[in-house]
Image (cartoon, rainbow, N blue to C red; front, side, top):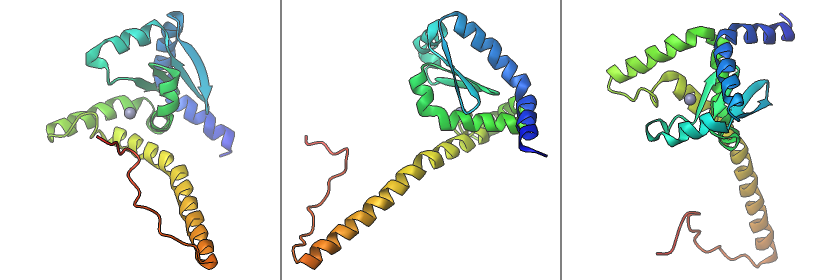
Length: 178
Ligand SMILES: [Zn+2]
């Protein structure tokens, strides 16, 4: 199968869920939300619906919702931050289509009956959190490895010059004096 046909099939398979997302997105946009496209996913945020959702303390933890190739969020800033997590849900819709609704619900019920948390322990959430952690970690790890390598090089250079002194004990970045 060529790549274009594969992409088209994924969009078609996820479309029933996307249609629900588009209906909500249309209402949100009528109420002042704005839409952007990132990696083939429509991201809608802001407006009256977002303000209403963030005003409800009980639903405060629902900051973003993915429905097929549509992500609805409280703000675009939040969606920028949550993109790896929400786009992992998009991949799940591409795989499971509309079946994701009952499968997601079933996973929450199973976890709840087992004494787990219906959201945090849900297998689709765990998958999305893991995908986001991998994506967020990888550039940071590369940067850290580069840092360590540079430090080692600097120390060797100073030792060679005979002027190396061990650095003072580093405090954690979040350390605050009382
Ligand atoms: Zn999630």
